[in-house]
Image 1 (cartoon, rainbow, N blue to C red):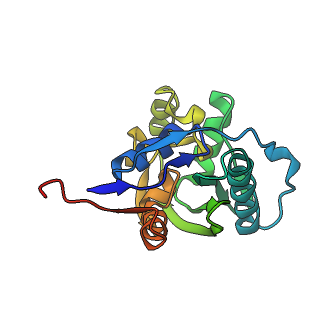
Image 2: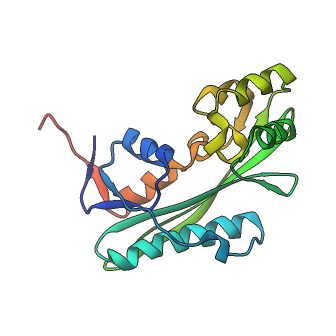
Length: 200
C-alpha cells in the first residue's frame, strides 16, 4: 500500500477530492483555503484553473511551510461557457439541457508544493465528456434527486449521474474532481509517498 512520509494537506473541503485521495491509500489532513476565487479574472480555462489551484495551495503552504500541500480547482466548460453549481432546479434543468447530446470539457488545475523542501509542481488535466441525449423525463427525474446542486455542471459522474455519460476521453477521476494518477505519480517521484509492504 501507499505509505505517507511527510504529512500531506488537501487545501479543499470537497468531499469528492477527499474520497479520491482516500481511495488512493493516502493519509492526509484537510485544511481548506479561503482564497477569494472572485479575485481572479476569467481568462482562458487552463490558465484560470491553474492560477486558482496555485493560489489555494500557496495560501495553505504559507501557513504550513513544512507540509506538502495539494490545491485544485475544477470547471466545466461547454461552448466557451463555464457551468458552475446550479442554485435552483430551473438552473439545473438548463445546464443539463445544454449538456444533453453534446461534448463538454472538464478542466482541473492542480498544484503540489512544499515551501521548506522547495517542491513545486502545477499542471492542468482536461477531460472530454460525451453526454447521451437526455429526455425531459430523465432530466426531471435527475433534478429531483437533488444530486446536481453542489456539482459544477449539475451532475456527478460517480453518483446517480453516471447514466448521463456516454463516453469519457481522458482522466475519469478528473471529472470527479482530481486527476489522481498524475498527482500520485508526482508524489512518488518526489518521495512524498512510497510503497510499504505490510507483510514485511
